[in-house]
Image (spheres, rainbow, N blue to C red):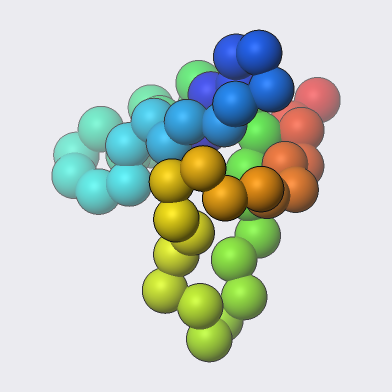
Length: 50
């Protein structure tokens, strides 16, 4: 995911470019197994990749 001004944005979730998306990511969000995803605008905790 990309971060800008405190807003997390998904880079890419499927397809051939997914590996390069992971390499460019600034962080990730853990989604519980029983949850399908998150709604736009919903507050999430971002784990930064250092």
